[in-house]
Image (spheres, one colour):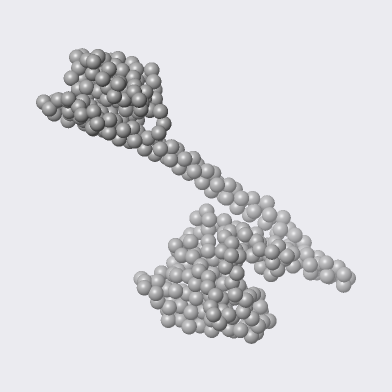
Length: 370
């Protein structure tokens, strides 16, 4: 327990001396024999007094009046009032105006009084701890606001400072392709074009995550047929499926969702691409949607490489890159984290599972159309 100071106030010097003897082994005790003297002591010790213990009946200024005035100079101190049985009106006044923690009757019981003061000190400590936590929360809120501002600035940086020169590179690259080139130059142009496409994809993916994280995506829910979403996959993804001779099968107990069309298409495309990448050749990618309470449980299942649970949790966090991405594999490595960011907009998230028959399963919940 920290070294607390209590202020004892009574117009009878014998009483304040008795209170000092009672508390001096545990606390630092300051004494006053009038309300005016007590207020002077409080002004001289700002924020250092934990408990004010005062008698009610004193000349010139009552205990209730002194406690009310003490709020200005010692707002966080705990306040205790000693009073007689006939002073109930004064007790009510002290409760209403002086913010007392408790009142005790005279003559006091030493053990009860000591316990009451200890409780008042604990109340003061809790108040101090709460104030500290509030200050920490305010600081954390400021840091979060600063972080949000940094994210927005980062988005502007990527959008302008990277996309603008990238647009110029793509434009001149297209002009170069129309030129008469040697075989070696054609090879160089192809490599530049491939790297440019990868850089463009990375910029678009980063911007999409940042838009999610900074709440800059406006959700527009419409009725969307899940069969259409699964079938309307991009041409490059269709080519990847054909290359590995993979097929998509649908098992849709729920055929329609009320959801943002862009969001659900992005999630399906990213998860199908992930299933294509890690699924075995000539395998089936199964997409199912079924009722689960008031939600729709969507699963995408593929047979092949199973999830590394330690790695997949990291990959679903923004901007984590595994070694395969660092070695320039297909894609940006942000597919799962993009899905997680988009699902946050619907208070949902991805769940991963490996089955006993060598299947990797991704699940997420979406609200049924009302």
